[in-house]
Amino acid sequence: MAEIIQIDYKTTLDLSGARYTKKQRVFMNEYLKCLNGSEAARRAGYSIKCAHQQAYENLGKSKIRQAIDKAINGRSRITLIEAGVIGPNEDLPERCS
Image (cartoon, rainbow, N blue to C red; front, side):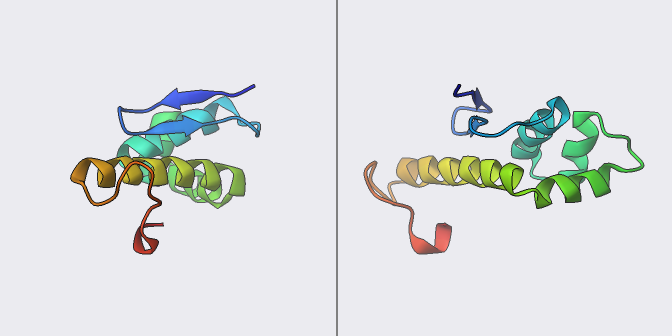
């Protein structure tokens, strides 16, 4: 079952194909908003004391990292299209991927 979460008008998070805990889902959502692992971990409900370690561990998990990277690349693509750098059917330039 495909599960897509809309973060903002440019960013979607695709959670299909892997299992995530509730905290991991919230962590990814919050990370895409602030791009700060420790802050995202605190917002996801991890304790203040271990938020940095939990962020490090979450970002080290390939399934989480891949989902986040896919969302960030999608956001970059939309930004470049809006700026007129690339067309809607073009791939991201090498320096952006």
